[in-house]
Length: 439
Ligand SMILES: NC(=O)c1ccc[n+]([C@@H]2O[C@H](COP(=O)([O-])OP(=O)(O)OC[C@H]3O[C@@H](n4cnc5c(N)ncnc54)[C@H](O)[C@@H]3O)[C@@H](O)[C@H]2O)c1
View 1 (cartoon, rainbow, N blue to C red):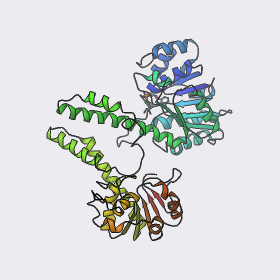
View 2: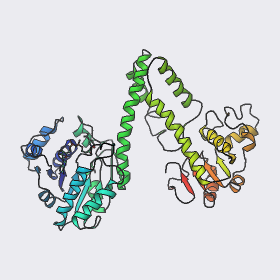
View 3: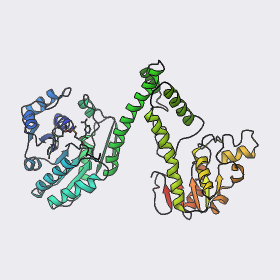
View 4: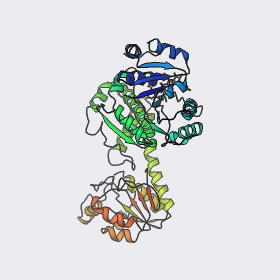
């Protein structure tokens, strides 16, 4: 069992401290608020949270949990510190790092006097780059030691919900942490070894980003449900029933489907149906700011792709895919057709490889090219042979992913600038002649 100091006896810190102590670790909680220190040492919880009072009483009584204001005492008496201090918004919305910085300075100072290895694990919510850009430099400056050598660093965000904090601590939806060194990684793996959920060991910045992604997603879910509730009510419907039915779909609605960063949505359904629902809501006097933002965000993703192509300064662009998604010849409201149209208007010569749209024209389907208002001369721009197209293009834009095309595209990427809207390969990131739309 480890000896752990927990900095910040707030909602996160006191729950973590009591749960770690309950698991058998020897925990010292640290705060600048003497009232909270006294409460813990008296065996009482400084916050109202289901089950916490009993847990604090039990662990303090067992001699596994105590509190102090002394950073030196906490650091010398522990092998790892979990930093759980607040990170309130600054006036401009920026993450407030005052408390985190104070704690890092104080821990760094105490580490200067400590001979053995110590892991410093940030648990406060901090924007990507904070561990590397703020915490590690402060720890190093104040300890005179090197991170990853004399002391370890980790980032291990907390996902608990107040009200069910102890339950969430023991049964989280996910665990993610980043660590600079193997000692800290081993500690975090051990602490989470009994969790019945996915445990992700990643780099520090990815762990920091996952926390913000999780909270943003929670917030989007709340606002989406509220907006659907408002529209439903205006139609005399029960939005809670509507959302419950939606949430029963674990195949598409509540699933990783549609949750992969990439290009804009389009097709014959999503754009038109969002428009229709917003129109209905407006008629009923209900505002739909979230659905409006969805439309704006989608339009911006097309702008973003257009900017990437412009930056390649190509005269002849080979576009891979023009239908609204791979596997179909459906061109209705295809964002790739919109992109092609904008590039053509800007004076770029655009040729297109799309095996499904090509086949529809070649087979003389009556519906060939249906739904395409964006590129009137589409048929003349279609090229049946991918390698021919790749050879005569100054830049390649990959809009749809066709697995048969992957070897040719990989060869072409070595010599021709490529703008990738799908991500041909998970290992690819922007750099050199390759630009991924959001990677
Ligand atoms: N509250 C939640 O449900 C929740 C959930 C997950 C993550 N978080 C994140 O965890 C962090 C802590 O949140 P919280 O709600 O527990 O905050 P809180 O305000 O309840 O507690 C923070 C504690 O840190 C103490 N503190 C401030 N400066 C200190 C210092 N220099 N040394 C020692 N202690 C110091 C404060 O006195 C306070 O007791 C935040 O970054 C928050 O965003 C919160």
